[in-house]
Length: 152
Image (cartoon, rainbow, N blue to C red; front, side, top):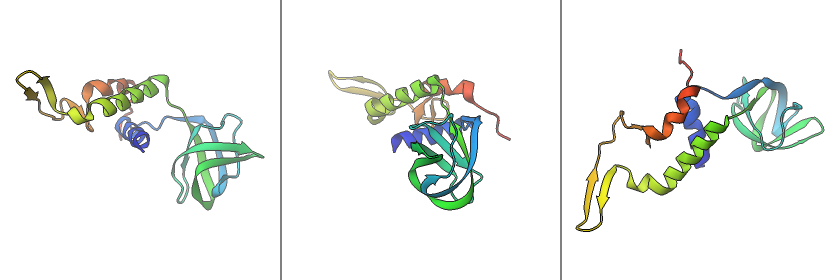
């Protein structure tokens, strides 16, 4: 759940959906099956369904067989889904690992600038738009700058 939320955060913040538009197909759907596939999509890949009446979103491919793509969630039966492969660069993956490590180790210490154990002294700093973005320190989100796209 946390990885999904970080993925959505990155996609919204950068205004980049990281789609490889060269790997795309159109398929009908029922339950967890897309009636179509691409030779460039394999098990474990992330795909985005768009231009669908109700199935728009991100899904993980679990199985490919007999020209059909099975995904990780049940979807509605519709005749038209545009399915596009989503590919994240290695620097995005490493950045997410760093965000998760920070989440696990430092989230509970948010706002603490320094802490002294002997005679117990704690100094706090302000969390404002200059030193945090969406609850994470600005320094942790620097890896996103090359992937920012203009908003229109």
